Length: 106
Image 1 (tube, rainbow, N blue to C red):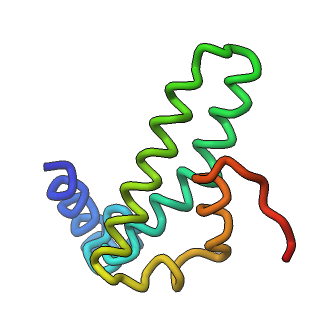
Image 2: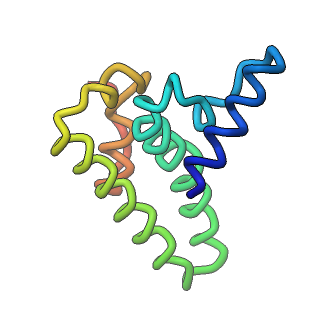
């Protein structure tokens, strides 16, 4: 349902001459899973890890975020989609965050 609403909003913005956000743009919907992975890896998970330092009982939120990342990654792999590699600037970010490890410059 939300995808339909987002698509309609993106269509309206395009009609008005604006470039819609990628999550609302039907033309770029193929990149959405990779963008979700990047957002969860770069924004959400680091914030949750900081939050856990203050409120230790928030660890289920981190577990849920990592689980969501794994679901999206597995969906991409099952569908044999290449958007993960082409859309993310650094695929190691997602893998490192899902595993709960720090990235290294290998």
